[in-house]
Image (cartoon, rainbow, N blue to C red; front, side, top):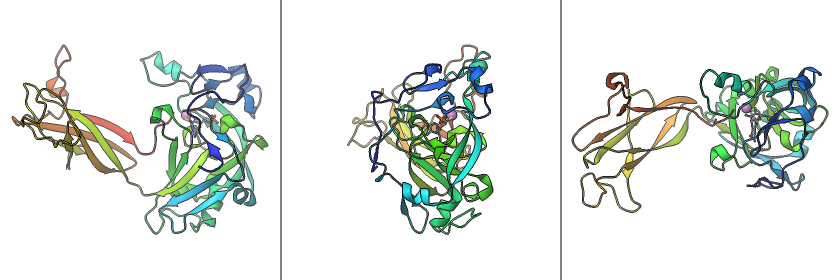
Length: 343
Ligand SMILES: Nc1nc2c(c(=O)[nH]1)N[C@H]1C(S)=C(S)[C@@H](COP(=O)(O)O)O[C@H]1N2
Ligand SMILES: [Mo]
């Protein structure tokens, strides 16, 4: 991306206030002492919680920095900072909270996964910037639109940071187009926080602010904005394995809890087609599978395999429950949320 780079290590991180309680060092995740929060209605930038998924990007040329707007839109465009500065400026006071705030307390009931936050992964600030509704109007998408003529129904924000949990990919989040084009929703492309340019931790030079508390949608270091359809194509990958040296005859994947299925492709070794029970296949080894499916914004993906003796995985774990909790061969179910992997 022009003008901004995303380092893959932590050698160029910005300075941070020594009072912050560090919950994870790399990527940097920290919250202020609780007393600092209640001592002012507007949280000072230094004390605002910092929730990162990778190293902080570096702006090397603000003049060249631009955000590309693409996807299901008639006129894709590159937006430079001057285009955004030229739009009417709004100052919106909004509290942002990480969805993982107070997670530590929850983990006392039963172990949970994620950064351990106390009670201060929350902050209130006045965000200054252009309204997303004005930016989209400039690009030909009118106010209060719920679908573009080419079927776009969501606005996806893509950043540039290399995120650990995304295997080095960027942080992304999306909101419905109806929210993005609603002037009352106050969605901002913000360049200021508490009256000063955003600092590096909070998304300099430009971030999205989606008011309404959930911080995860407020993508920092914006790289592109994509207008997307409700459904997204994703690749489902997994393994299937049977006992006794039997091969895998087929694997099916469903996105509607088993009402309809698509057959997945199967493979073991590159360049050699997998044929169950053939000498070219490793009979004692697992078989990988892969299928492309269109999924709605949220879905439960199910996979099941059939072996060469026509054994099929049972649908539910309840029917094969046993005291030792072994041999759970039931259908594998995975819940997904497209374009999302936050908190
Ligand atoms: N590019 C990018 N945007 C991001 C994140 C991130 O790691 N990278 N974290 C998200 C999450 S989970 C939260 S809660 C907020 C945190 O914003 P803050 O660090 O400015 O408080 O930013 C969101 N936007
Ligand atoms: Mo978050």
